[in-house]
Image (cartoon, rainbow, N blue to C red; front, side):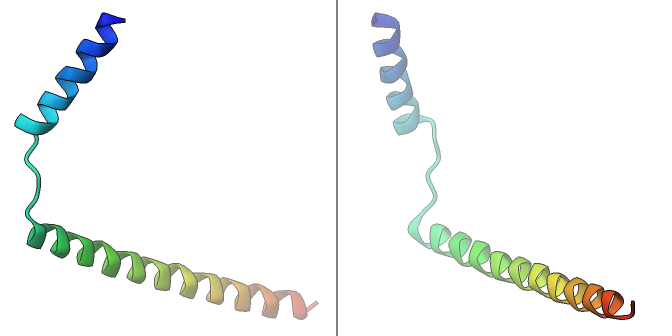
Length: 63
């Protein structure tokens, strides 16, 4: 059990001392970048889905 406690204590110390946390403005900028990237990716996938759906519907209606 002491190994688990030691691991937790070392993890807490590492998070406090060695990890470089972003500033609030850096965090905001990164969040906005991720949001914009996610929206662009969602629009791209949605457009591809629409094109494939329309194309396959047209193809199947030909027979």
